[in-house]
Image 1 (cartoon, chains in turn yellow, orange, green, red):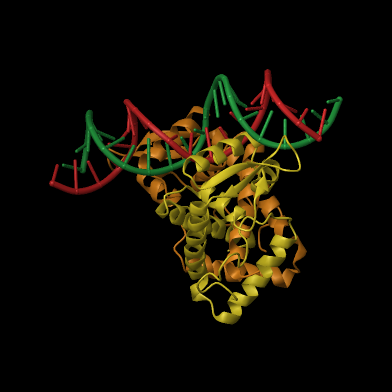
Image 2: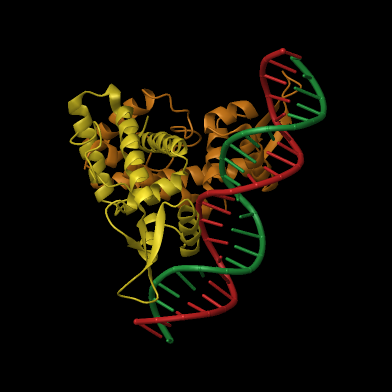
Length: 153
Length: 153
DNA sequence: TATTGTTATACTCTATAACTATA
DNA sequence: TATAGTTATAGAGTATAACAATA
């Protein structure tokens, strides 16, 4: 298997786990991703649009639907009257942590067949790929409480 | 960056490249994936449903839309009167090869910052992850003509 | 005038449930 | 009765273009 097929099929696998986990928490993959991005802090719509690589109108709709679930909230941006800041509600924060922890747990199981040293090597190489390609932080490492089993590995 | 964040962010990155590439060929990511799966041979709807992890009605719609673009074709299954076989049309085969080659080229660029040996190591470790988790072959390695620059690496 | 964000509109994607036809 | 697919329906996701309000 060449590097391209390996990357694409790994991506497909991770995506399926992420989607399935979100589903079990009553949210969609996109909503889960939004919650994870917002875990450390509130974002302006424009920032979110860039981070999630979505057209701004697409993001408006995503925030609308997630707001309707009571998971995020729009607040005025004190530094720009035109803007809004999107942040987690108390419910959203609780769900985000649960979803994040559980999803970490499941994804951490994917390389279960690798020995500890190989997992370290894989993590290091992927980190270099990610950092070399300006990937926005859609999934913070070690945000919130230490996710079970995924903290330092 | 731990292994979980590395996997999720890599997945996000690969997904973005794949989607962008599809877009430039006038198709969606899902249609592109369908075309790639069908490159080696025709599939029954049920097989496709399993391979792409889609509900069968979701797949019916996807095939409908892709058929409307003239890229795939439904044919009766000679071995089961109830079933249909979905295969590429001549146009679909041509587009699939172009899309596949170009997408391979772009994804092969993602680990450009890694030395050849490190790329080999990464490919090997990811292959073990994929093979250890029963990922369907959504993106064949080396199907059709040798994709530029992604053949043996 | 440029930027921030929303609305209007039109697709695509997805799933569940009900259905048809064949095995 | 079980299986292969389709249809009906509903909602989520996405983008482009036009718009409102503020910088």
